Amino acid sequence: MPLILGLESSCDDSAVALVSSDRQILAQAVVGQNDAHRPFGGVVPEIAARAHVDILPGLIRAVLAEADVAVGEVDAIAATAGPGLIGGVMVALLAGKGLAIATGKPLIAVNHLEGHALSPRLVDRNLDFPYLLLLASGGHCQLLEVRGVGDYRRLATTIDDAAGEAFDKAAKLLGLGYPGGPAIEQLAKDGDPKAVKLPRPLVGSGEPHFSFAGLKGAVQREVAGGKHKPGDLAASFQQAVIDCMIDRTRVALAASNAPTLVVAGGVAANGPLRAALADLAAAEGRAFSVPPAWLCTDNAAMIAWAGAERLALGMTDGLDAPARARWPLDETAEKVRGAGAKG
Ligand code: KG4
Ligand code: ZN
Image (cartoon, rainbow, N blue to C red; front, side):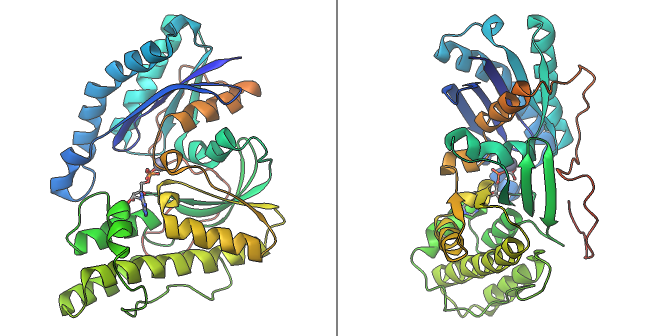
C-alpha cells in the first residue's frame, strides 16, 4: 500500500502525518501555536511562519520515527500549497519539495480546502461522490458540491466573515481566549440560547450565502450594554450561527441531488452544530457524515489523505508548484456581492 507523508503549515498549526492509501494513519502530530498568538487575539502571520520553521523539521523526524518508517520508504510527499498565510504555506511546501528531491518521490501540492473537503473519506470508506459539503473554518464558510477529486461546484460562500472568524471575534468581545470556537462552545454550556435576541443574517434569502459581520456587531452592542451573563451571550451567539448554517444548508440541499450531507473544517468540531446538521440531514432524507473533531481542525492526516486520493489518480505536481495565498476550490465560481467578499 502506498505511504504518503503529509505536511501542513498554512495557518497556526504545524502538522505532519504518515497515512497509507488504505486509510491507515501510521503516525501523526499537530503542534499548535495558541500561546504565541493569544496575546494578540488572533494569528500573527510573521510569528506563525517563524514558528513553523522551528517546529516542522523535528516533527517530520518524530512522525517517521514513531511509524518506524524511513523517509526513503515513503511513496509520495503531500504538502499544503495554499490557501493560507503565505509565509507559513511556504514552509511546508518547501520542506515537501526538499524531501521530494532527496527521495526522488513525487510531490503533491495539496489545496488545504481540498484536505478538509476529502477528510471525511479518510474515516468513512462508504462515503462516495457526490456529496454536499458545508466547509466551515477560520478562513472559509462555503457550501460545495464535491463531485470528485479536484471537481467542486461552489453553491455559496460568505459575503463577509467566515464562520470560525465570527466565533473568534465574538470570543474576543467576550474576553475569551483564542481560538474562540472551543471557548464559546464551552461557555455556552452554562447559558440559555434564547436569552439574548440576536439577528440571523440572510436567513430566508433564496441563495444559500452566509453573512456573519452583523452578528458580531450585535454581540458588541450587547456586551457594551452589560445586561447579560457571558454564558447566555455565548449560547445565544452560538445558536444564531447554527440557525444561519442550518437555514443556508437547507437551501443548498434543495438545489443539490447529492445523497449525503457532509460537514468539515474547524467549526465542524462544534457539538451542537454537528447535532443540528444531523437532524437537518435526517429531515431532508439525506445521509450525514462528519469526521471526528480532531480531523475537523487543522491536521496533516487530511493533507496526506488528499495526497493519497490524488496519487491514486496520477495527479502529482512538478517542483515548480507555487505557494498560493488564495486558491479557490471552484475557480469558476462568481464573486458574490458584499463588503469584503471572500472566496
Ligand atoms: O480548519 P481550522 O482548524 O483552520 C482553518 O483552516 O481556518 O479552523 C479553525 C477555526 C477557528 O476559527 C476556530 O475558532 C474554529 O475553527 N473552531 C470552532 C470549534 N473548534 C474550532 N468553532 C466552533 N466550535 C468549535 N468547537
Ligand atoms: Zn483549515
